[in-house]
View 1 (tube, helix red, strand yellow):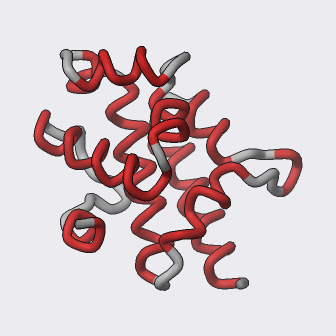
View 2 (cartoon, helix red, strand yellow):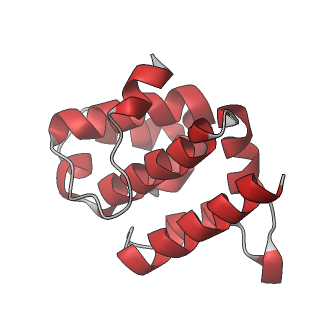
Length: 129
């Protein structure tokens, strides 16, 4: 399922996702990153809170949807070089200057500047290893 979902995953500069896109992003993130990291990236305080969002309108118009879209874009960078299993670890890792990619994404609005910086960091990481 992941390979199929990632082939259809949006890349840099993607527009807001429709409800079905959000559902697909949740599915990819859950499968690759796990539910706890997916909930964290979306901005939920608990997994139960995140589950309630999944059933409601929060993810269709909230910054959480943009964050999850960005997470799928990051996963796809790892997927492209056959290192999908390393995406969750990289997101949790403390990088240059103490930056933790997961925290940077969670604290952002999913804005293009943050997403671009995370793309560049993920691409540098996957190219260097």
